[in-house]
Length: 318
Image 1 (cartoon, one colour):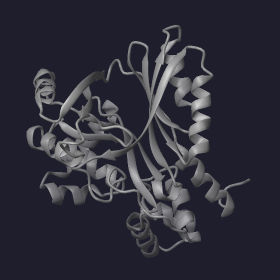
Image 2 (tube, helix red, strand yellow; image 1 turned 180 degrees about the horizontal axis):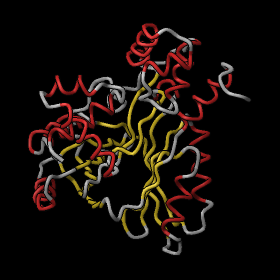
Image 3 (tube, helix red, strand yellow; image 1 turned 60 degrees about the vertical axis):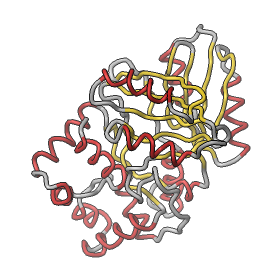
Image 4 (cartoon, one colour; image 1 turned 90 degrees about the vertical axis):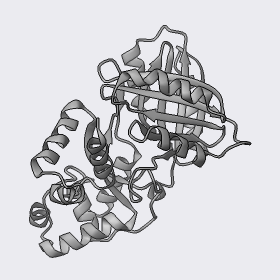
């Protein structure tokens, strides 16, 4: 991927409804170029889905990273899906032999306990660790779900009607929304703007960055010498295209760095530079391929909560 692919991904991550014409003007690129780039990202599986998601503040939730070690007796695909199908888990995948990771969205101690009990009950699991984390994506737009927890708001009946349309097709044309809701086009546009800027929901994409190879660096750093912001600046300065951000653990000084290189040959140089950095204590790396990565992308609690809102508003049958 080049700078334009990266820019388009972050634009759609922040607002999946952004018109192609707006992107053309912003990046001074022809309409067909933008359109074809987006189609290519969809075809490659980088863009998995266009969706509506409630903000983390609306959910009252936090992200949780789970690393699981097994005894090797499990069926890999079955195990990935078993973990990923848990209602709290957002996605799961294998990271190395007998090692798996999962990302969960939890709303408190009870849900953490529930997830712990579920993982413990799987016979092939030897041990697991859980780490609350925050996403760090310095080049993402400020309104992106990677940069803000959003706000807790109460949706109006008209807003819920429009969200009900967008839940199945977040890029549904305004004319179609107006037709289905009987809300005038001008008012639909106004409500869409309110929703996008209100911080209660995100019109966004779900994505997988392995294109064709993604490097994940688990960097344990000395937090007495440096804070995470300086580490992020270090990566931005040296690898502005390859560095996509990552996840910062809150209970340990670990930064999970996401690297998407233009060429696989840069991996060894990046790893060598990170190991030699003055803030580095230790480094673990995982290499993901778009061909070999087992992934389980699942709808999270946002989907469930939206369905509850729609039922209460009488928009779906109970």
